[in-house]
Image 1 (spheres, helix red, strand yellow):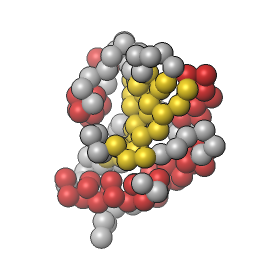
Image 2 (cartoon, rainbow, N blue to C red):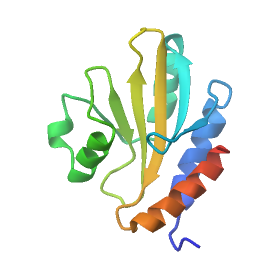
Image 3 (cartoon, rainbow, N blue to C red):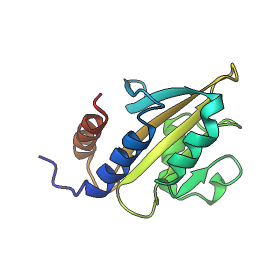
Image 4 (tube, rainbow, N blue to C red):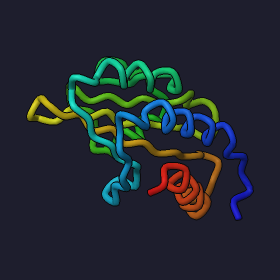
Length: 140
C-alpha cells in the first residue's frame, strides 16, 4: 500500500475527468505510461482553458530554460518539445506533480493530451503504485 497523500492529485484529476468527460475519451498509453485523449482542434481553446484551471504553469520552447530540473527530466522523457508542443504542470516545487503533454498532430486537425502524475520523493516502485492508482481514477 502506498503511504503517500494522493488527495490533492486525485482532486485535480477527478475535476479534469468531470469537466472534460463530455469532450474526451481516456485510454492508456503504454509508450509513455500516461492516460491519453485525442480531440479536434476546434475544441482547443475550451480544453486549454479547462486544463489551465488545474495546472499552474505551461512550459514551451520559449520558457524551458527557466524550468527546474524536474521539468527538464519530464520534457526529456517525452523526447523534448517541438515548436507547437507544450507541457502543462501543477507547481513543480510541490512534491506530487500532475502533468499534461499537449501535442498537436501534423495533420493540423487533431491534438493529443497525455496526463501523468509523479512524486519526486517516492521511489520508482512507489511511483509505479501511484501510477496504478492514477490509472484507476481515469478508469484505464
